Length: 160
Image 1 (cartoon, rainbow, N blue to C red):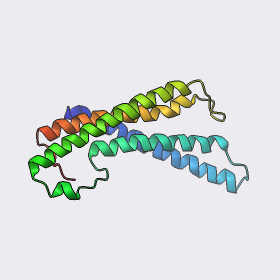
Image 2 (cartoon, rainbow, N blue to C red; image 1 turned 90 degrees about the vertical axis):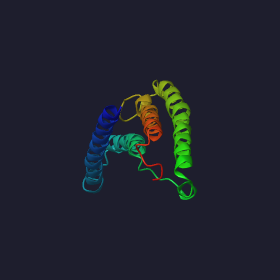
Image 3 (tube, rainbow, N blue to C red; image 1 turned 45 degrees about the vertical axis):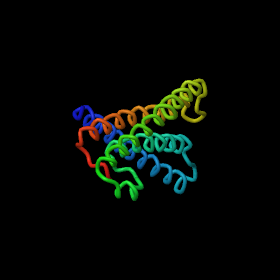
Image 4 (cartoon, rainbow, N blue to C red; image 1 turned 180 degrees about the horizontal axis):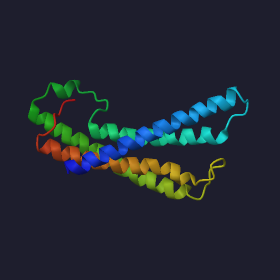
C-alpha cells in the first residue's frame, strides 16, 4: 500500500509542478500581450483560470496525503496517545465521508451535467474543468484510507 501511495504522490506532485509551470508561461504571455501589444489573449486567461482550479484540487489532495494540511490540534495534543489515535481515525473517516459525498458524488454529478456546456473561448466541455473536483476527491479518499491504515498500525504520529 505504501508503494501505491508513493506512486500516487509522485504522479500528483509532477502534475501540480507541470500545471504551475504552464500557468507561469500563460500568465507571463497574458501580461506581455496586454501591456505591450494592447491586445490581451482571452484563451490564455481562461486556460490559466481552469488550470488554477485543477492545481488547487490536486494540490489539496497532495497536501492531505502528506498530512501537511492545516490542523488545530490544541485539545488533541493534551490527550493521551490512545485517545489521539482514535480521534485521528475519526477525523480521517469524517474527511473520507465528506470527500465521498460532496467531492466525488457531487463532483461527478456536476461533471456529467456540464459536459453539454462548451466553454466559449477554449471550445471544451465545462465538465472537463469540473472533473477536477471528483478526481481530487478520489485522491483524498485514497489518502484517508491509507492514513486510517497507518494510524491503526501506529506508523504515523497522530499529532501534527
